Length: 314
Image (cartoon, rainbow, N blue to C red; front, side, top):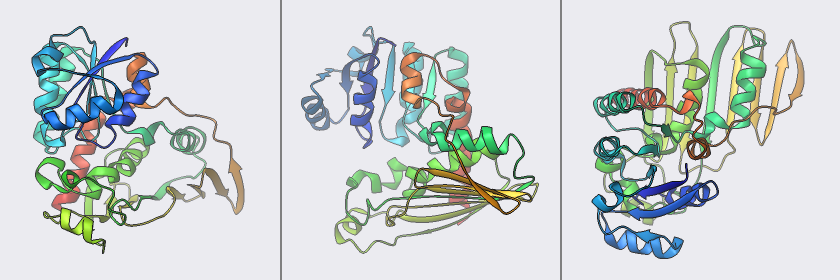
């Protein structure tokens, strides 16, 4: 994709996306309803600030990177479909199942390129575990999976105030970075059928607590189950300093990824598994116009569904 624009700088990853997209094409300009945010972002990244949404939509950019409030994704993506612009969106797809399904229907009818940012699916550990261990049946019947992914953004008061706005963000740690674990679990095992979550506000940081007027969670534990008996656990928080970890156990053995190392234990023998398979980041796939179905709109719908079941079953 030769030319793209950015719609929204609400999300903290907007700058990262600009840097990445610029390696594979031209980022022409930025539209953001909050003009103060727009001016500051464009000054920082040396980008053109569109004078109106109509100017961006009628321009010759082929695609648009969406970093608006999650609550606006349906409105934004439907307008992009109408304008004939290819779409890359930050996760999650939408806050409600209804909005996610409406987006999916419009995207599929349009024939436009679409990708959603679930990069943990693309990472080498996920692809290697799937292709080199699970698909080969080395663990036998899998009965448990645990994914843990946390940081200390709330503990260190590093999140902007609008990330604590339940109406626009949809929630806290679970819908923000907890979806990375959910996306990997979905990629490896599909949709669970039972959901239960435990969500708390755990930080003692006064700055973060002052921002968190809606009391959205900064600490979460999700437990999900499948009809075949598999139990999946997803741990995420913004108050814990732990390495990303995934552990999978089956009747013949287990495997584990942590600290950039994959190991498997089969019949009591532990070996290191070389990380041999990885995929491009979904934004790079978008820019190269070669998008794996794992980052398509159906995945977006599925993860939205998982998040909502967990919020419903606290």
